[in-house]
Length: 401
Image (tube, rainbow, N blue to C red; front, side, top):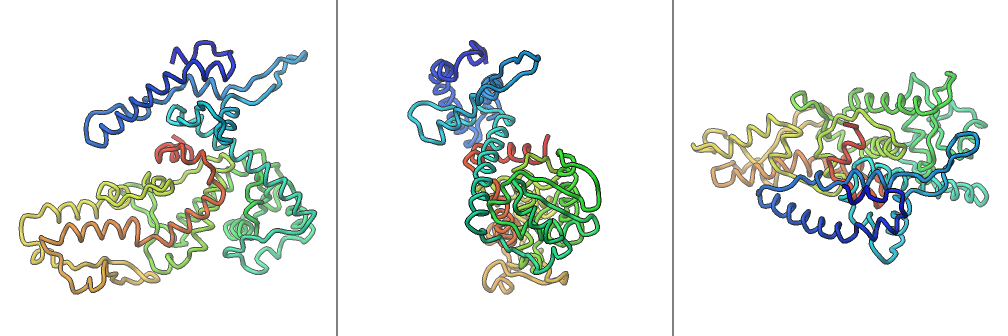
């Protein structure tokens, strides 16, 4: 920390030259610690390798004081310059090549930087398309005439605006918001967001956006749409395994768009989901009993008891390779493998059964819904900086601390 703080007013090049050798040594220590942790040995927590002083130094924006006493930015921050060098593949050391050094706040700044760059590109492309013709819209789940209540001149002005304008009526907030998103182009979704509650005065300076997303998340997760299931013990939602819900890929894609739009615009969400979801969003699927505890701890305990049972599993439990599910709210049985309804769970096969149950609950049984949700989210948040985050860090950025 002292090394990173020394000469704080110096150039990025001077800072890089001074600390690069130390970072190399720290990287070796971090790798050794990660290896020890993977083997179940004592290890240094990953968070201990973050450098707050470096993150603060890089995030600082150079300014100069004007005659009237105010300060004016004179150039990009060190983080912006370092990211540009890293993204362009310039030779030499960059801090972005070692993102484990950054604080969660600094990684959030990088996501915002990528968002700003994508927004700028979106606005430039929107201008070109306004001159040379429209771009195809998403069209996912959009109903013809769903926004017919919106006057044509207002709709045209919104489409030509340098912002993504969401006009919603409180009486039909979810429908208006989702239909508006579905009717936009992928590039237009990257534009800076402005929210208008129809019939209400007020300029969106952040408060209206926060309110809209809070209302949308509450309605989509708890409003009777049947897309997610609540577990009271862990107080979080998971994807519904109802067959009707799993057929609604377009609905999950739009929910993913809502969450991605909030992340893209730096809006903290009251999103009650397990850390497991953020692991899977980052391409780290997990199907273990420990992971299942985040979604359904009661089922996890029951499966653990089955594995530890000393008696005759087949006679005592009388279970087959099936799980209970629902179809349009009605109970049904799903086979975990072909012929599973006729295959009993025995002492010899119980480990396979537990593995298949866990995979079904966390992966295969919700795959259509999760894949659509992830695709919607990544429509807006698929920049390189996303890979810098751990699941816990992504959760902190989305949901706050």
